Length: 353
Ligand SMILES: Nc1ncnc2[nH]cnc12
Ligand SMILES: [Zn+2]
Image 1: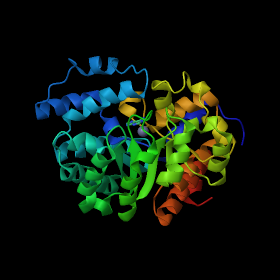
Image 2: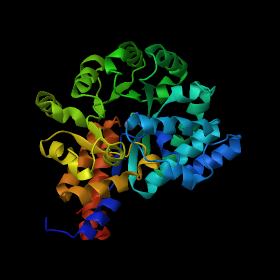
Image 3: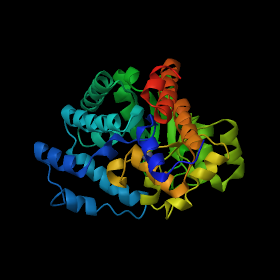
Image 4: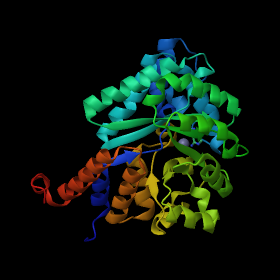
């Protein structure tokens, strides 16, 4: 490939088909929507307006973010609220050519406020079905347990999700990582196994590389959310490479939460070049300053990746997804067609060149 300019590379990234595998739907709650839902539901917020709230988004670490994130969920009360929240993200995905997304939700953050599992699930699944019809996108739901709470609280949430088990793709594990090792959630993950779900967990975001091992060995996770601390352990890096265990890396999140002081210090390029299955994701875009494309552009500005590295990152995300084989094939075809189209123009792509 010939060298292309920074502007051309940014255009290339903007039009590239994308797959997002690490996204908390509650983390897409933009301040404007938070205020609109607060008004609709009679909830009082502790900031005067969306701008003041946005100014408060200065985080020292994961916990300082989570404190605001959980406060934000207080405006989500009805199925319509969950529907509107999800639909806003899906519409954004359509604009950014995100063709497949696997979204996490935190039921315990809502059940504890008296919002029923049916309310959450009706809203989210309704939006997913409409997004499939309207945009042709495919999606999946990951029920994520809050690791700062006792395992039994998570098990109770899982039992309430049983009637919805066929609408959920995977179990996840998130929230405050330090001091909350994955091994504590073995029984909960066994229940998810009985439901036929896949398994993922946040590990090695702020917590040590040993939590990544633990998530793999004790929770049998199929992919690791974040996982960037794997670079502290060379044996672990070799394992992740050998078994192509996907890492759902979230660049802007890692900088906003102080995991890296600057994107140029991030290890994602090194991990990619060593052959690990790295993917790029947005985590909580309303809080961290950007959705998929913004994350990709920030990575490009920091690392000046090649086109083939971007194709690798996207192929990794397709392979790492829980989409059915036929859908993965269709996504790969869309990726190839978009690249041909970008370089040779739409006629060539349509002719199957
Ligand atoms: N980045 C993150 N880490 C852990 N838990 C989360 N919940 C929402 N975003 C999270
Ligand atoms: Zn996350």
